[in-house]
Image 1 (cartoon, protein in one colour):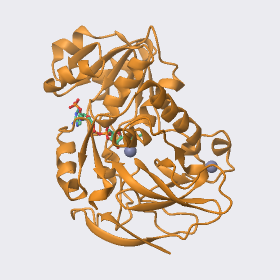
Image 2: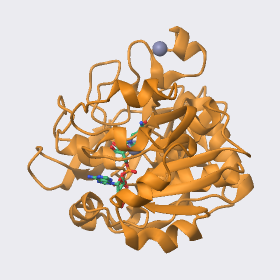
Image 3: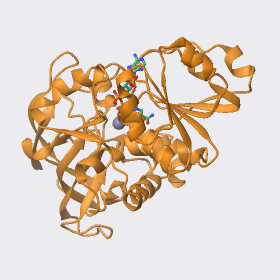
Image 4: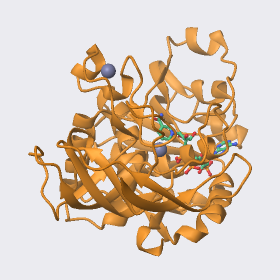
Length: 346
Ligand code: NAP
Ligand code: ZN
Ligand code: ZN
């Protein structure tokens, strides 16, 4: 086994702290990665605090991982020692179900082996990217260009792909009016990506102080979602909404912003189910949909697209010992727009 160190949540109510553990010895198809940066996703907080239920402790969160390959198994063909690589939200899947065969491993019939807070095929707990190294099968490892600052690339592995995937699935581009609800880690990537595809983007935020940032990110309009007048003025105006809100809120207020046949995609995951009025949907044949991260093929496509188009996340780089404060700030919506841990601080 390979000795590793990281930061772990010992229980849902205990702050994260230093933790020693082991990674598996590299197998023939594995690569070993020295982690340089790991983004802090709101899903890390949901899971570290067991807000979705079923969390496994101690938990080393982190699924926005970028680092350098330090070792490769003897049958690895796609990576070499010294290359930059990324790991996202899952590290394995059944590989045989229709979703896996279609490159949609995130929708695996047996659920993928998630990067942390999961169990691998041997039944061992998985530990994520708030750590110094990770061992991953090369087929679940991504190529990362060195053209862009790696701290800004790390969040693409979750926030980037989670917003890119619905934009591609719904073929969003020129001529579409797109709403992005919640300007946090996912939201700011949704703005950048939708703008890059040529869409007209409106940010809907509870934070009036984020207006200037929204414009700087490329958004064309900004609505304070708590302002009923502004919301009413925008009724029936949008083709597509990406809803990234991480907490309990009223879906119906956003559904009424959609035009005929408009779609709102939920990517944010509030802890509890929320009521949806049938009227809001039937009146304009509106659709409410969901989307989960993206498959390996699409994640690679997104990383290549971002490298070509100079798209990275706006980040606040932190040391690992700031992680508990970072969580508190994220819960308050006080992050511009992704915390990324510099793993050399471990
Ligand atoms: P984040 O950085 O904390 O951003 C969430 C944003 O939502 C906040 O910045 C805030 O924006 C807004 N918000 C927060 N609380 C709110 C409330 N009570 N009412 C209205 N708006 C509120 O979080 P994130 O990392 O982007 O993640 C967002 C959600 O997506 C989380 O639930 C996460 O678990 C989920 N997620 C899902 C997937 C997927 O595959 N579907 C992947 C990754 C993450 P404003 O200040 O602009 O209002
Ligand atoms: Zn995430
Ligand atoms: Zn599968």
